[in-house]
Length: 72
Image (cartoon, rainbow, N blue to C red; front, top):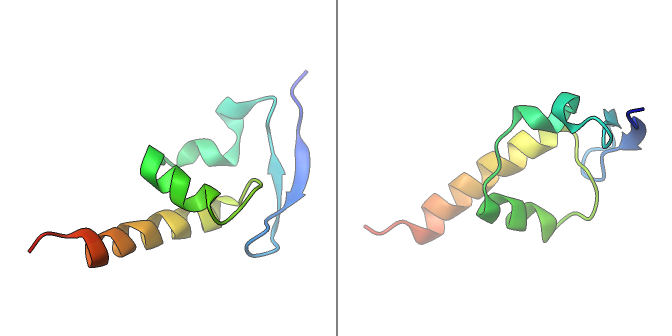
């Protein structure tokens, strides 16, 4: 039986359901995060984030990388 765990996002305090036992239907499956983005997020947070914060942090990482690591 899938485990659905109510959580509060540590970044924005929004309530959401984490589906750790049914990851194919979890809200986080809708976003693709590469290893660098995952490390960027994991350095700042120790628990699951809501989908809005995951998307926002992914975008912030892209902007951070473009600002500080673009050759040009």
